[in-house]
Length: 302
Image (tube, rainbow, N blue to C red):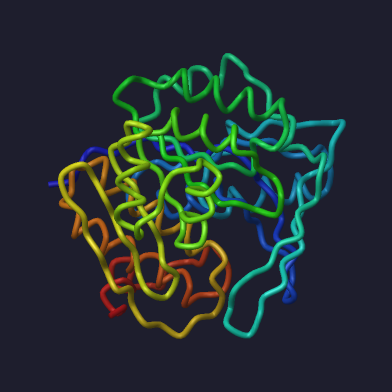
């Protein structure tokens, strides 16, 4: 029997990743929404593009990916966002993010208010909150969701585009927080909370911000999931890495997919690692599943 299809929103920056091999549509919201849709829910990217050639190309690409463009705003005053991406010999990306672009000026509209009320889950990060306009809109969106909606703060610290206050406010608005093993100690220092290891730090954040779930990703070493009642560690899957762009967003999509369905924590952890590993084994953040479908590809990871 098919499970209920949830409406899941990726909220924030939509941009072009300018990779050594060429440009690819990116930004966590689109990456997250795409994998969400592959997993069987309705993934909706919500962002803003410039009224320029890159913006038009982004709309075309979203259509090719099977994603709705109904909640992509257009801005005639600011260009479509771009990020210069350099990938090192291990496949790890470094980002140079352009400023004062369309997604820095996301507006709060009745259409978006209606979307917030319909969403089963929404994923947001810190980067799109670097400007006051978009930060205000993102907070209104989160406040506009139903009380039972899953609100995922995928921390994603980039360059210097965050403050302690923005991080703390985002934690308060979230029910689930995902961050990596490098971001966790950094945030604990910023919040001036004592650290005694990853699980202890996760539990302190969990109780301090009344969260339901914290996820700490560890790169090639898997991940740690922590709730009030239990924890789960997974060692990750070994794959030949093409690049890691979008792997974290894919992990988040699988995490949300399982969490919405009340899937056991250990199973969520395994599936999320499997999906993240599959994306890392492919080029780019939005790889097409092969003829056998995503499920067959995931079964081959391990």
